[in-house]
Length: 95
Image (cartoon, rainbow, N blue to C red; front, side, top):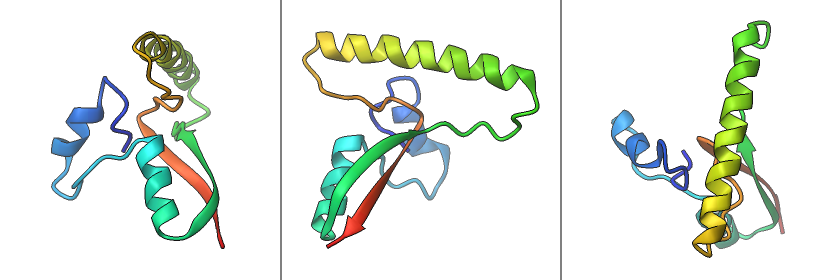
């Protein structure tokens, strides 16, 4: 769960009993570095399961516009947050 998302970041903690903490792209990178991973690349997870449903494309467009808007606001506040999706993942390689 992406804690940097201002819309659902805080709600994700209370959503399920097993969601103990949220991560951001930065904290996920830190965790992977502590585990001796290198070349860490966080990315947004865009999980739209039913691609045959045209409303998912509308949802993806609306979500993209909202994330872009939030990214601009974060930049105005001096933050370097790039991944603002509901969920965040990363690709990394073991040293």
